[in-house]
Every structure is written in C-alpha cells, then in structure tokens.
Image 1 (tube, helix red, strand yellow):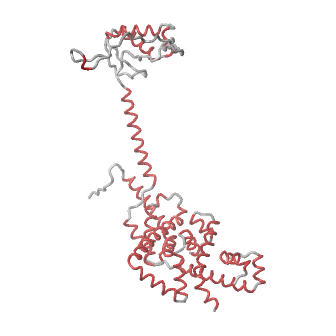
Image 2 (cartoon, each protein chain N blue to C red):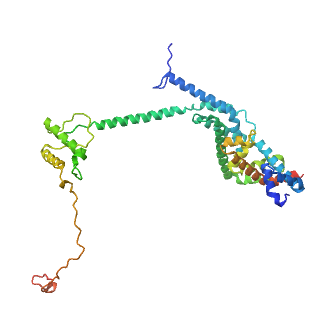
Image 3 (cartoon, helix red, strand yellow):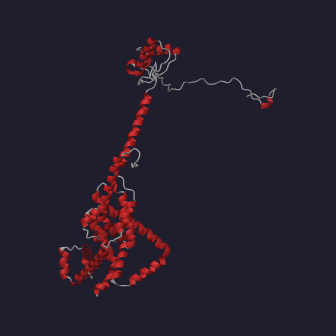
Length: 194
Length: 227
C-alpha cells in the first residue's frame, strides 16, 4: 500500500526535514543547558519566595520562557545570566502579587505572626529573621547577595551573571551585608555574649 | 564597644572582611575593640551561614521532568533566520511591485507638441530652456508628418513636459516661440521699474464754495430738503 505524507503547501519534504532537524537541535541544546542551569533558576526563585512549591513553579515558568526565546539568544554562553534574570523577575512578580493578596486578606494575622517570631530566639528563628530582612532589601542588593551565597559563586562570577562590573558587585555586597547586620544585630548579640 | 576613633572603620572592615594594617595594629592593642570586632565578625558569619542555607536549597527531583513534559507541549521555537527570510521576501515583493507601477506610469502616450510657457523669458531662451527646444522639434516633426492631432505610439515618453496644442492655436504658438527665440532686449524686460513717488507735498488750491443755502429737511415744496 502506498503511503502519502502531508507536507505544508509550497515546501518540499526535504525542507521540512531540515527544519525539523534544526528544531530538534535547538531542543537538544536547550535541554543540555537546562540540566546545567535549572538548579540556579530554582534557587534564585526560592531565595526570593522562600517557598519550595512556588519556587518550583517559578523555575518551570522561567525555563519555559527561556525555551520560547532560546532561538533569539545570540550568545548562548550568556544563558545562565539570562535565566537568572528571567527567574528573578518572575519570582519578584509572584512575590508582589502574593504580598498584595496577603495584605488584602489577612493583615492582622501577618502582624501576629511577626510578633511571635521576634519573641523566639532559636537558630531557626534567626533564619526566619534573616529571610524577612532579606525581603526588605532593595532588589539589586538582594540578588547580589543571593547569587554570591549560591553555589559558591565568586564576585567575578556574580558580575558576569549580572553583567555589571566587579566593583559594583563588591559595593552592593558591602551595603547589603551592612543593612542585614543592622537589622539582625540586636537579635544575635545575646547569643554571642553567652 | 569600639573606640570612638575606630568605630566606623572597624564596622566597615567587619562588613567587607578587609582589615588594613593600621586597624589590625589597633585591634592587637585594644581589648575592647578586639572583642567588639569579634562580635561583629560572628554576626556576619551567622548571616553568611544563613544566606548559604537559604540560597542553596536542594532542587526538587520533579522540576526537570516537569519542565521536559511541558516542553513537549510547547511549539518548537523557530530559528531566527526564517523570520528574516520572510521579512526579506515581503520587502523584495514590495520593491518589485513599486518598480512595475513606476514603469507603467512612464509608458504614457507620445504627444506632438511639448512646451511650457516660460515664467520669465530671457534673451537666451533657446539655449537655456529645454522645453522650448523640445517644442520646436516636435512641431517640425509634426509638420513633416502633416499630423494634426497627437497619435499615441506607445513609445517611452520624453522627459520634458508636454502640452497639447489644438490645430487652430498652432500658428499662434509658433509665432510665440519665434518671438521668444529672437534675441531682443525687450523680451527680458518683464519687470518694469516703477518710479518712486515724490516725497514733497504738492500744494493744492483752496476749495472755494460760492454760496451755501441751508434749509430744513421738510422745507422743500416736494418734501425733500437740500444741503
């Protein structure tokens, strides 16, 4: 029995095959890069959202967005930096919308939780305080701090990821750490004195 | 507690983890600053530890398989050059259409007379004005062919402007061209100088009224007054 193959009008089977091969190559390349940088996207999202499930959703969305525009990325070596920015943006958007919702729905409950948190003095609580202090940092400072703490990145690597000079990374790190220290000093001191 | 003089610099040194020899020397001498600096360092160490714990969370094992499944449902991305090929084809098509349109408009019917009335005639009109020359050539050709009306030939149109001249006006037009071609000083005198008005006032004789009779409006016999 003869087999018929449907092809797009105006194009030959060979052209179709070439296009398909090209797409497969793009997909393959993307998957390789995703395996390498997927964790980074997740960690950036988690650093902002502090919630595993939300971070996973954000990382997935960031990877899908990156895939849609992957063919337009001229310099493929910039993939990690590009993905970090996409993930950070999406995570921030989600955080803002969640905060708005939270404010709308249960302002009083949030306040009560915060009061409780300040009264406790355990290492777990220090982590919570640190994370809430991180939330109050400006976006630029927060991202630098997160990336430098992530996967043992050096200052040079962070500057490459953010496409900013090393000096800028250094100064942002300095100001971010100082701001965190100001907020957490009173919390840590008793532990140290003991 | 830090000494007053070293407070700021030691706080900054703890934040940046960079100690200058001067500060190092002071810390070696001052017990108070030494313990305060150690406290600051332990604060930053706690922050760094907390940050590392927050930033290096374990990646869930479901993430990448989930993304791969989602990628299967995504339309495969097109390469960039395909878009450019499409855009180039559209531009090329538009250019070809424009060229064809232009060529069609240039293939206008040929005319027998080509001329344009000069706005400012000059004595060297035959040398300067291409329209006049083209018109004369056309007239001579048409005389030879004894053609009275323009005959469309389908040939490419001349670049000069064309004016259709009826048969009855041809003689007048030829006369006009002959006059324009003839070197004469009068032909260029299109602009006349208007003499300036005299600045001095011309004395006028006083108006004299011999007699004036004033009557009321209803004073006349026919009911109409005089002034």
